[in-house]
Length: 161
Image 1 (spheres, rainbow, N blue to C red):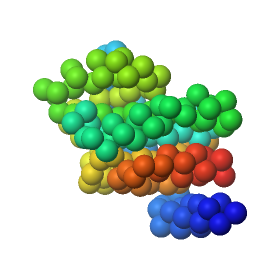
Image 2: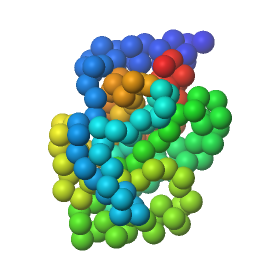
Image 3: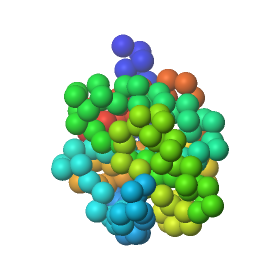
């Protein structure tokens, strides 16, 4: 019970501290298959979605993404949440992203932010960085860094949405 109360308290504080009316800016990025995606159009058909900024060289990013991938099917069954990854690897390293995603078997949508346009527009300063958007695309949570078990906080927030 205490864990649930702490999680809810953190969620409320995060929502208060972050402008819940903010949405993803309109920036064209390529996905790992070379298709152009405008970030303002990312949605999940009225359900919440998670956007995780990462880099292939970032060890905490890899730990976080592997942890999320492990529970992602359960999250989808329970809440319908979608996870979108945004790689901030520079152009010369972006060719490492698709092989990594394929090798890990990740079933996430993956975008390449090779010039850090979205990353900068969102005012982010470090990876890993995760944001959660509600069913209307409003950013309701934003968090930098990763500690083991941090993915549980993400699904708790999604459940409240």
